[in-house]
Amino acid sequence: MKENLREIYKNMDLTELIIKCQQDDKLALEELIKRHEKIIYNTLYHLDPNRIDIADIAQEALFRMTRAIKTLKKPVTFKFWLNQIITNLFYDELRRKTRRLATISMDTPYMDGGEDEASPSRDIADTGKMPEESTLSKELDEVIKESIDDLPEQFRTVIILRELQGLSYEEIAELTKTNIGTVKSRLARARAKLQEQIKPYLEHERGGE
Image (cartoon, rainbow, N blue to C red):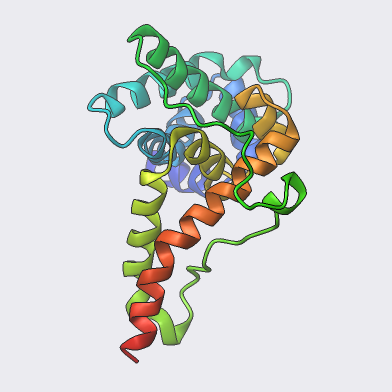
């Protein structure tokens, strides 16, 4: 009987699941944790792949999520709310360990033509698994993942929140305590750096065709 219930919760809409969690439904909370434990871990890993305590921080983030779920007034804002928990916890840990954060001057535009030209819309290479690309897609995913890991922290954070978590510019600005213009500038430069790192791989694959 309980397994049948678990299957129902597994297919439940996120908003409905959160409402049930707020009503002390243990199976709903179990499902919410299952859905997000990997997301939380991956987000923390991408924020700092060199940390050795990512699993511990992820567990703490899950604990804070479950403890505070009743305080979430609008279930539709869950993704943003959860990212607040993750990023706040991550930077709390950095401050606690007095780790020196990498800093990059954002005053110098990536290109020479000023801020407007420095922030064009640039896209990361599409990794969608088209039939003719299925053999290469996993390799390209790994190249992109490694390239994201190599980005300076300020750039890595915005690319993760935007491309992997799907947050809006406004939400990212609030989370990172910056303004929308800075978010867009950092995102454009992060994408440009990713393009630079991915380009040799793509050219190599084209050369091998």
